[in-house]
Image 1 (cartoon, rainbow, N blue to C red):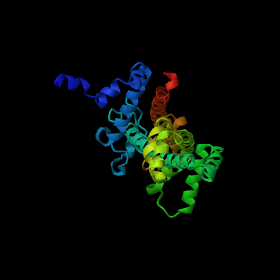
Image 2 (cartoon, one colour; image 1 turned 45 degrees about the horizontal axis):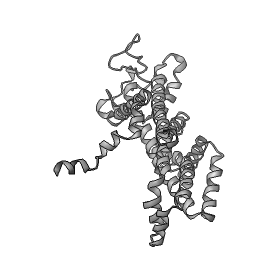
Image 3 (cartoon, rainbow, N blue to C red; image 1 turned 90 degrees about the horizontal axis):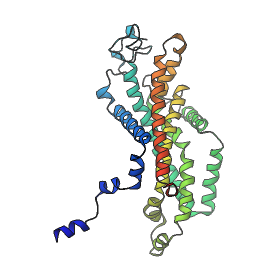
Length: 313
């Protein structure tokens, strides 16, 4: 009797994961597995940067200007204390990359979360309510699609700084970046969720929820939303890479994270001033870290899109 009950017991969460089509698709591609490992290692390095970084690049009191512009340790004049060299302020490039990745990922995750919440909410509202509400939201989305996302982010960033001119730029730079990048990415979520909601709202389970008198907001949140989250996860993964690139671009242009708390984009901008004078490592290593991170996340996003598409199985 015990043996029969054990056999009839449903498989656990991890058993279902390892027996799923998505796990099979993941394990049969060495490129995707390598991208996942690289992404995981970068995330770990950023998360535990204060523990594993050789130096604290944000502690200005600990910087020694006599060590500025030190080349990588394998070059002539290099110092093993600074494996990848130092910048013009004497900051260790390796430590700056670890801390900079932390800021870039934080901006990316926060802006994607903000864009997803805004886009999903507006998409559900437009698809479920229809009529004039749908028309207004979608026309706003169509207008925003005519502008590149980087231009939208620049306009929003400039507008916020001009309206709230009295705020401390160093303290507000992170939040302004998250707001500007997130507000430039919400359209993709809204259009995708709206399309899925238009399909789901006419199905029997939604009709049954209406008949028993559930509030429309509860129907959208409890019944429609879980069934439209598949495409949203794919968009969020791809948009994470786009958000990191946008943050790096804004920081490179000088309107992003300040140089006292550099992200990868800020490090590249600082290194660009010394690129043609021979100090190539200041821009090269942060640029390589940014490229590797974005490539790995993009590969995972492309794989997730294909894995969740039943037509490609």
